[in-house]
Image (tube, rainbow, N blue to C red; front, side, top):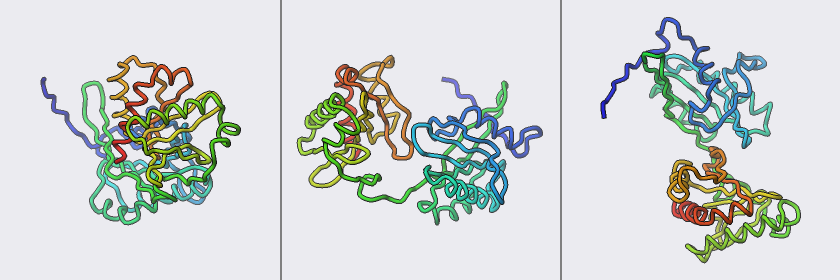
Length: 292
């Protein structure tokens, strides 16, 4: 296989490229950032008493929002202050969402990393370094995550606040008898690799317990006619397992990756569960092993 060496260029020193150009490229295709299947909520969003937020992105499947600031060249003090200020304004205005600050620059300096590492965990912050390469047909961009958001742990071991309920609550108020029967069958599949697992009924999801403690390698969110089964495995690993068992033309309803909680997700009906028990069993076992 022939190797083609790419010529890296500086966007900041380019004669025609501007920050607005990079903003439009990201706006047209937010998936370039590899933060999930995000949509653009706003561009050049005016901040009261401040400037304008470059991009506001959102995950339509969750309550995650990303306040994105773009800078050509290297990061500097004003860039980080502006990013955190916009993040703080947005989280106070819309506390119902989970907000993450995102800094994009061509050069994420070591000094910058040293400073922001001090408060990362208290302030969810992602730093992306953008590299540009000259190409006969235009310019190619690559985004590398050099700092990921670290969130402080919540109550319990498995991130979400678990308010206990019981099976009757789920069957009568949140889902239906038919979907709860699928929950029972999923539970039976987990006993093929660990008979000590128990179901844990919580207000927002059904999880698992092992030896008296939460052990949520997978969680179940039943609805009236469908349920969402979530696995604590990377999306790529789940897709590999699905392809191995079902082939690349699988009709399994795979949902967008939940980047906030690090979960791969599938949507199931009673019918689709019956057709895909083999791969579901594999996915449950993979998540169980990954959780160890």
